[in-house]
Length: 169
Figure 1 (cartoon, one colour):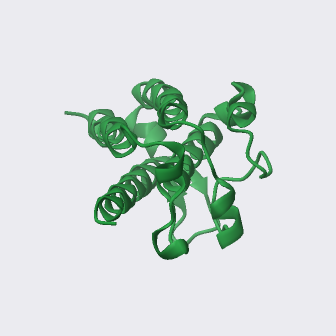
Figure 2: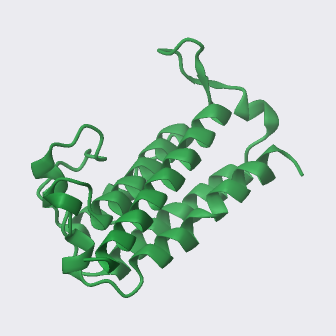
Figure 3: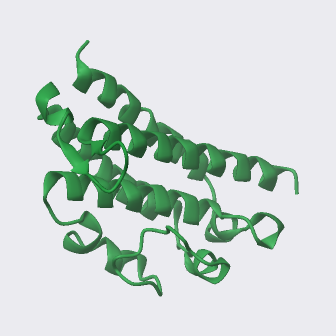
């Protein structure tokens, strides 16, 4: 197993989690916020998709699928096209409303497919490249990719927890 295989193994775990969390939920359940202040399933899945889209596009030197593949228009959210969810206020979290679980899954699947294609083409030397020198130590591409995987898995787990809360209401 090489470095790419390890990274891909992490990324391959995300789509099934996304699908299982949103499967069978309607727009009301997707937008439900625990205690009216927590993050909704819709926001969590949208956010993890946006972060992966943003970070992979940046690493690959390409545009985000959110804007170039029309996902921003399909979601039609009252947010700027550059929004990924970082630092969102409660009102912004509430504004992430989706009509269907399929929209969330379809966007994540498009992002995931591009991520897999990108990661497959990387060498071990590529993973050592510094992509952000504003940190100490500077962030390499390998570290950034692990961070994206960790962030996505964490938010998918949070969404699964919210789904569990919905069952107990």
